[in-house]
Image (cartoon, rainbow, N blue to C red):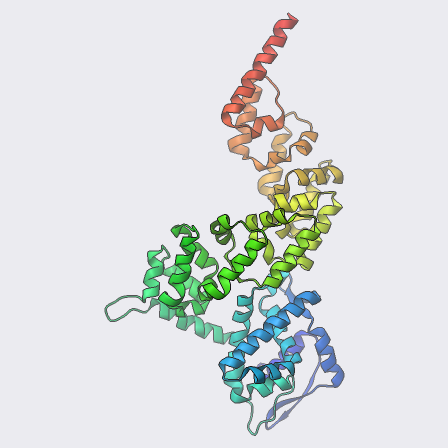
Length: 487
């Protein structure tokens, strides 16, 4: 593969990722590609493929759901339209150009899959802001290369427009973000002649965010360095405080999602929150919801609708849908077709009540089937439990599959074997695995054995300290009475 990354050579890199073999010939005007019509047709079809990073770091191809491709194309078109308008093109010209640029839009979508392959691998879809952040630097690099001819480049893709001079080389795409990161970090650390940091930096530090944290956020999201204090940062902070977010949580929220500072309150955030409230999100819980998953407010309404429709399909009522979104807002980030639906199918194969599981422990649906769910199922099978019993356990205690085998399930099982209880007790009370082995299980079992009595497993662990003591005394008294009666 060639090393230079001009418009044509970048195209070769892209096509190479899709497995095409292309011929090229050198001319005084750079590289011209001899692409046959069927190659271009195949490229359109294969634009629906994405590059995934496997666990060993190699690249493989996997088909992206058509619904997701369609949504990403619309997002890419929106980003390109906005970019053209900022360059001075009218709405009509920008729209006309984009309508002629299907192959370039496919190319932008393939870039998203390459840049964010790790996100796709775990079934998470990108937010609108993440799509913008991935595409705009690339469009800026093309603008630097082609200048006023960028619209022609987009329309004629993958064929480069004819020029009277050689096409200039573009620096590797990765270098542009590095340069922006350096400038952005420099901006947040520079001081005035009086030795003062910028007002927005001082404000953030007063909120409890140290300078190293601010630099870390800026490296990840360079635009954060250019947000004004009065116009961007302070309004969102004050808004969060009014919602009841503790001041100590603000640095955490901004650290997770600095893009919030760049979103209009009146045009985006508040309307999105109203929309979510209509879907059932508890307006009294916004402080907790935003703290748990601040990116929630950056997703499109179509994404919300897709996830909510799935929850209805699984049998949840409108009230329970609201509860799920409030308790586990991260569920919005998971792809319905790649993540939620396959996970629901897997739990149904165990006989679990999927709607009940979604309501009680929706975070379970964010786990990997291969890496998390199947190993836990196998763990219980190897210990003599049937699939029906495992389904009952997961229906009764959804968090069961969220526990680590090595750190939780195995040591607690090993101790359970010393307790002289039937393994069926764990089917009745799988919550056993949710209690601390050292702080709850072992101390209470020791007290029960010392008293010489026998209590149900749920009585030993689920009762408060006072109620446990009372239950233990009552059982001891009953046992003593039985012995007396026998005498």
